[in-house]
Length: 109
Image 1: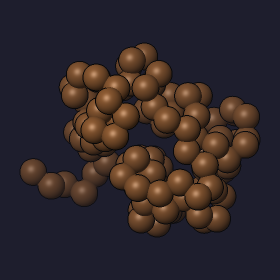
Image 2 (image 1 turned 45 degrees about the vertical axis):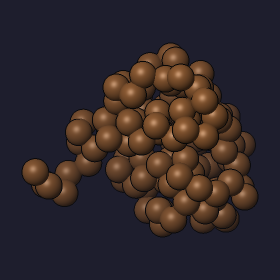
Image 3 (image 1 turned 135 degrees about the horizontal axis):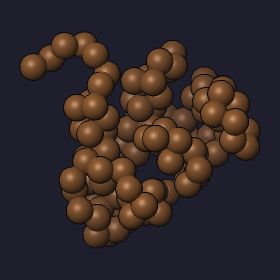
């Protein structure tokens, strides 16, 4: 049921969406199991300002679930860039505004 709490079921749903999109768009051949493991992390594409689409939307949705104020619209613009940089700073990782392997990993840690 819907409880308006971004818990483990929501996290799993976002991972399923991510795995599905990576398979659909990039033929990654991932098991769509909702588990963010090494194979899923390695299959993730890098996102940056200007990225658009479902994978960007899923990244934004995950940031929203983690408590960041972000518009989930699938468009990696200036506002998303600022939130990604804040997330990176908060996690003690390189603050470059790119959502690469390290940032993806921390989003689902």
